[in-house]
Length: 286
View (cartoon, rainbow, N blue to C red):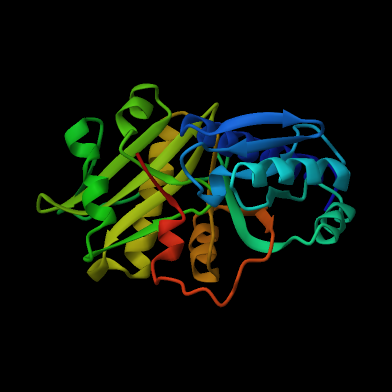
């Protein structure tokens, strides 16, 4: 990778970090500066993506001393000791400092990005399929229905919670875009994106379980990408949790752009887990 490519990659990752941080603050999280780190914490939610320590913006190196102070602050708030950052922005020795503090990899979510200058064709929809914007309290309430409905699968990015219950405000301020997929006037799926200074993030999408096949999975992502570009975004990003998902994004022109990584104190692995834990840890109910 050339120096120019490395520079561009870091610029993209910084924009992704800035987008995610602002989204977390819009959900009620607070940002406390502590030396060379920021402590992001939420007063009423313990979701991992709303409670973490992260290096301050434009900081190339952070000593374990400052990281530990941030972790202690989180712990005093009753939160899990956790450091979260975009891999690729910090030197390998930074990871060594995290391991020295007893932290282990909690999650690593690959980031896929699409730049507006890249080729993109508008998706072709079947005649009986349509998408409409959800921009009223009634239409946005559909997420309450889909989230708890056993006939739908809800996929959340994992780096930004799906906030349910305070959507109308974010739609009004153009921080959020929701689309509902209808077939014969019946809701077959939905998608949500957040918007921040020219970037768009595909936060979540829901799909009727009987439609869970590659062609439909690609179509709903194509519609999300098209809507984001029409909204004026010049950078669209999403997480690729599986290789199959990443292949879909790559076929659409997305590029691999690093990962958002979380290091946290080891948890009790013997504790029982529910089947929907991964979804529960990605939904903020207001």
